[in-house]
Length: 216
Image (cartoon, rainbow, N blue to C red; front, side, top):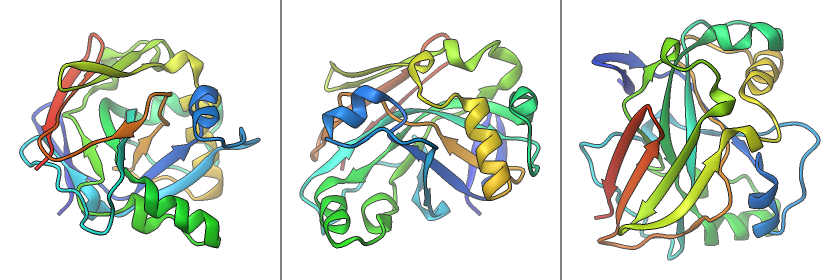
């Protein structure tokens, strides 16, 4: 059973929703247009990885990138959730990595194919232990960072999201429906880059939780 930890309590994960191009600077660094509505893709639950395991790069890619993100856990699902009520559906917050086989993604985009092979390989959804939503007054005021081998690679300010978490929850609930245990990867800021065997990755959701992984 795929699960994450909310504090010490395991929670079964049902769906993993990811929001792409949600920071203007990240869209620009990859030469992508800013979208008029949330750009959604999915990862299988088999992609989940906690800190007890190392990141194993897929053999079919030579250019896997880190994408550090604020992650939200839905505690109460629903359909057609109003934005002003959306944050009441969140059970917890954490920090995570949306790992991306960039070379595979580029080829898929060129052919007009789905991104699943680039985004959904085993270990491609790294998630920290989550903190209770009650400990976060406003997720849009959160900041986070990623260091690789001690060097700062990404710094994120949730206030710079193109679509706030409340807007994401409302949109996902309207289009797909949300379930208890769904995870939302809310988008990555600029600074994505390649990781290789032996790299040590340290993530921090400031004032809330930290996590680390090593690449096998």
